Image (cartoon, rainbow, N blue to C red; front, side):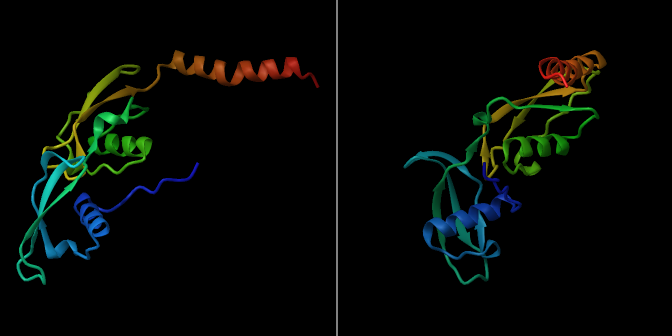
Length: 173
């Protein structure tokens, strides 16, 4: 499986790069102003944005561009587990790694990370802001805080002790 490169560019720069690539343009981010995204249904696109020349740039006027924001509800199941309490940024980072996407905190509504007891599962709603450039919609994240000791022992038994025992019985020295 090939490694997927996760962008480290902010969403507005990613959008300008997309506009440049798809329209054979060479806009620099500082040369243009981006409007807030507007939901639309147009030519298989779900979003419109107006790009306006920045004062003092070599461009003039405005133009509408249509593109697709990515839907959070297409993530499928999202679950994370941690042995230590997590922050909002930790949660976004773990989900970004799990789903191999970039998640900039300012693209999402504020959410509260539940305070959980050992072994409890909390649910977090990850919701894109209406003005998010890259994302739309929402998804639920299940957050498991620590495995109880007895579950950790069961995991150890099932995945290490029993396989080693069966291997030595089936393949004696």
